[in-house]
Image 1: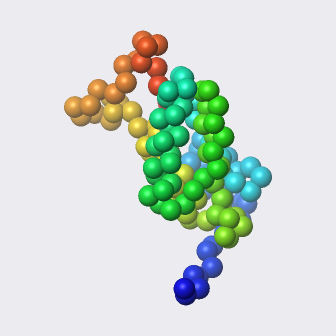
Image 2: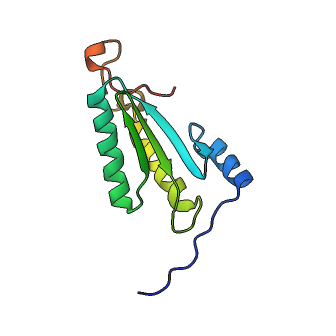
Length: 127
């Protein structure tokens, strides 16, 4: 197997700027970029975990997850590079795009999850 080129690791100041610009709900903490998603129930939590799992497997870049009844925390770092690389930023952006998707606000034929009825509560979206 050929050696892969060394991945670029972002310096703290540059990373903080990128997070502010591209991923404002993510934070840099203890060597990882992190984001917590709040859900309405265990069922919604499992759907979020499965969605992140699918995206991570498709990307072949796997985050650490902390899962509780109504929260999923995502922690990303490129372990082989010992820091934050483009892999982490790209996967975080894709996770953010998919988890925060609200069809009703995007326009089109899809209605999205009904609002205002707790029976259908799903994710606490960032507005």
